Length: 183
Ligand code: NI
Image 1 (cartoon, helix red, strand yellow):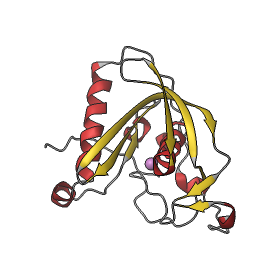
Image 2 (cartoon, rainbow, N blue to C red):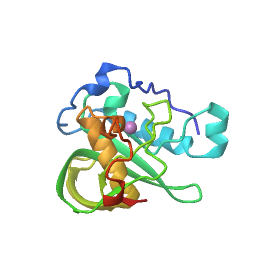
Image 3 (tube, rainbow, N blue to C red):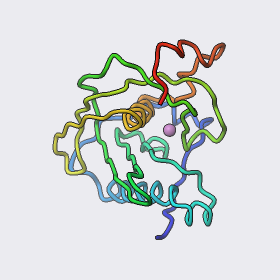
Image 4 (spheres, helix red, strand yellow):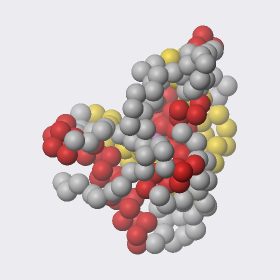
């Protein structure tokens, strides 16, 4: 596999604070290429041979805005088995419904735009139903739960110019811990 040349913006970059825009179809060639590049990058970042060779931080999600493009598109690459990956390409997502139950990732969330450890609780819905469009513009629905629900919310926040660090209480990073389930 060849590592795609993509430039991920750092948290200090104000572009990350921009709201992304609705995407119209058909997608341009460039956008399709970028989606493929992101899938390859995220996959390679989770395979030891490649992340060691290229000194990559492992990551499972990227939104277009993290590459400086304000479009409502994100990609998630989940390792479902040893070096077996499942991709989600999500365009123009909307939450249809969500659980009352909140969860948080015990070891903390990570982001390829945040190059430091940040401790604290990021409250997320345990389950959601999402409407979105696929790469061909077809309307789709998906149910997500647990870590994939967290990943979807993390990426949807990017589309609104929000980073996970914004959601951690500054004074008390473990506020309301007992009202949420740790995953
Ligand atoms: Ni992120």
